[in-house]
Image (cartoon, rainbow over all chains, first blue to last red; front, side, top):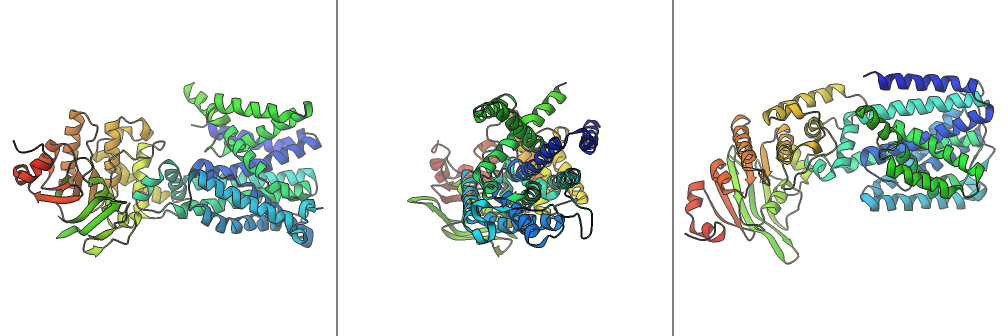
Length: 310
Length: 249
């Protein structure tokens, strides 16, 4: 079947052409959407493919944002160094958090991840010397692509950096879920007890994927800080974790591309509704409820069902 | 040679002694049936042997090694594979993937995060072989949840068999099957035992199945082994008749 490949190529072509079509502020919105798409994609790895519902995924986005902001503010290194630092910081912190959290399953796992995330949020809020407290770190510069390399300060340049990161992350996740490791994750999601009876403890798998997902969320956060020019405690708050779940469900859980689209749709709906009314949350909530009821499997799951039926 | 030996194996749940002082020896290559009334402790004993439950007393030895301290995954890797009384499969995965993952989990390479194509193909070949042995190959691409109940029971056996175990534990493989499916399953188990040279320990309620298949029969009653012998001997055993077969005629 060549349909999916053609769609992918069309999407790539569109991503490449859009900077010349869109106005400056529209390109900025698209960049924002892609960053949160990457965040939702990372959540899908644990939620959609391993069956681990995390209520604290924002923590790793935030850690990535702070890691990246600190590097850029204090050292002015090229952006990719900051990205690496952000992803690394998120992954390193996820290791002990994951080690504790994966001792539990289901709602208890969710609660543990939430508790750790709120703990990290509090640290970011209180550790003024390092994080700037509630003010956050402002004036995070978009530096260069490499030492002595081109500046990333133009909207076009930064857009292409974000796009490249998202596409690479998507390809990476796709390879991951099709690898022996990824197959094992899906078996854990389906029936953990059976998995264990077939010869492997599930926890090491869960821990590894938890760290990978956190590092990717960290990458998203690390892109976010220089893009917006700041990192503040809000990006670690539980509200973003909850929105992550909604993005994944809107786009289609366990589809990788779905959550990216879901994040885009989710944020766009908010943007549009909030331009009409200050009570936009009521309406975006209603839209979400309707989507879950009438589009089970999200946008991508529903589209696939329609295609196979046709 | 003895492949499995339990020595004074026991498990209590609070005041309940589910399994008490069970000393059981299974010889390599034999097909042993474990029978007993409901609540006799058969499934608990299976959990103790496969490692899903830890015993409160006694030991389990597999091929001469004490495996009591090993958890279920480690025992599986040593060669003990099992099925469950209540069908336990990966419902959304394909029939083929259910079996393939069973092969992969035992064979290794599970932490290949990227690529691993050769590994996937090798495990798929073995999975197909196992599915073929159980007559499920033509449904390999379907989600496992779509299979009828009888085929799901066979799929579980295929998963265990694909791991090329030395000891296969089957927990009521014919449970809930129609007479025709039961007959087919019995034929499959007999063929596996003969062709794959695997030792089988099977819990079964259907006495026709037991007397038809088993080389030897062990009888569990209130958590204790009360008799052991050939099917004929067990049929003639007065204690067993009182405990299980509805009293002497």
